[in-house]
Image (cartoon, rainbow, N blue to C red; front, top):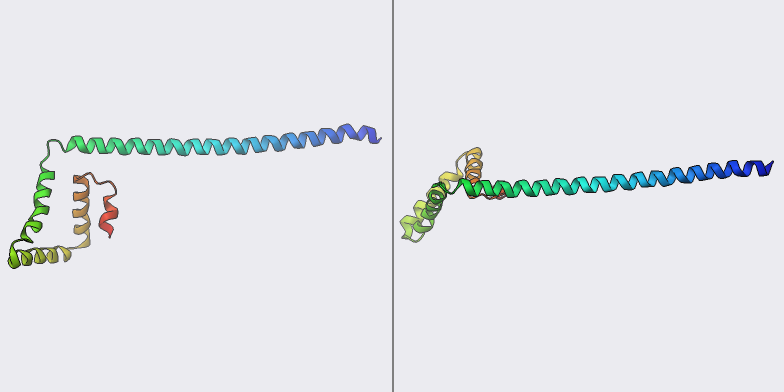
Length: 127
């Protein structure tokens, strides 16, 4: 009688072990697939970022907005060396900008960031 049960118990144990092995293999395969998918997402993101920067550089080739903003940002720098009257003009100008609505300040920051192709410019202007 016991001899008749041994093959049955052996088959049950063998089936259970085989099921556990298949379960572990499936979990491993799922982890590998997840890692591959994450790597693909990172690759696509890097490719899109490089493409965006290339498009921005090509778009600014025939544009004067970069030069305009450089001149605009140079004015306070130059006025700072023009004595008290120049510094007063700069201080009053920045005080007026600080009094502007936040949406205008953020919009101005976004325009400047996009003109100079600064990725993540919003982080800079949040401070």
